Every structure is written in C-alpha cells, then in structure tokens.
Image (cartoon, rainbow, N blue to C red; front, side):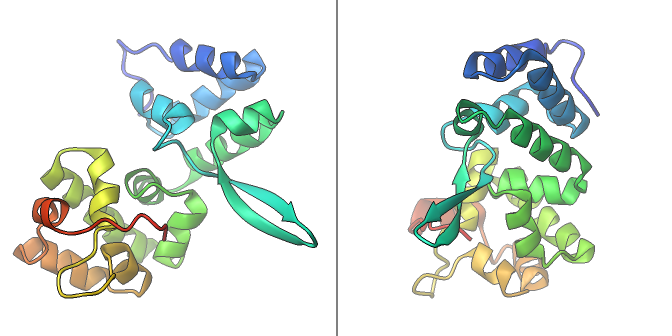
Length: 197
C-alpha cells in the first residue's frame, strides 16, 4: 500500500532522529511501516503516541528472573536499541494484514495478537473482522481497544478480548452481526477494564 502521495514520511523520520535513532535506521523504520501499509499518521502513532504506540517486548531482569515488559519506541531508542525497533517494524511489515489489524486496533504487539488468535490464520481472519466491524461502528481506532476491554453486561469482569482468548470469536462475530453486542452501547454503559489481554 505505501504512503499516500500527499504524505511526507520524512516527518516520522525526523521524529525518530530527534529521539536519537541514527538517520539511516530511522528511514528504514519508516520504510518498513510504509511497507506494512501504515499511513503517516498511523506510523506516528506506532512510533510515538503516548497511549497507542506499539508495545515492544522489553526483557527486564528482576533478581534471577526475567520479566517481559512493554516499552515504547522512544524508550528503546533512548536506550540505544534503534536496531531492535527496526527489527520489530520489519516483523510488523511481514505479518499478515489480519495480525497487523489486530495489533493496531486492540493495541498489542504481534506476540499479543498471535496469543489472541492461537497463531491460527483462520482465527486471525475472524478476530480481525471483529476488530474492523467494531471500528466501523464506533468510528475511531482508539475506541476499538476500549470496546474490546469493556466489561460485558451480565458478567462480573468478562470482556470481548477474554472471550476471544477463550476461542469464542465465531460467537462474538455472530453477536455483533445480530446486534446483540452493541459497541457504542458498551462504551457508554459498561465499565472499562484496561488490564491487558
């Protein structure tokens, strides 16, 4: 897909360089995100949005254990890890369009998206369709994540993402199609539980 003609990917390159990435690495990161089909605005979100930036896996040593944390691009670049960001941008570009959609719309890494789908292309297609359907109904990428992590009526704390993890994507898609799951109503009436998935 690449960049739209009127967009200037150099803006994102400059932002990465300002963070401390070498210019060639910054340009390669932006090129990979363009290869992934992201617009300039989507690439800026992937790189630097305080709430929606791509969550890079970052191993953190605590005593004799290693815990995987999520880190933003800015943090990794300031730690001298621009090459790691480039590697993940290339992996993002090589992922399936469905995995990228799940990652972007439900705000997770590719590893998170694959955990949600069980690494099944068939499940990924259904879950990406769910994310895109929610996007059509709520009108913003940001609200897709919120709908996915809103507590469902009649449950104590079960969310759409919990149902997807449990392999209930067909039922969720059917309920969306029939109108039994109303994304706008969920956003307005149900509590949000942003505790990850």
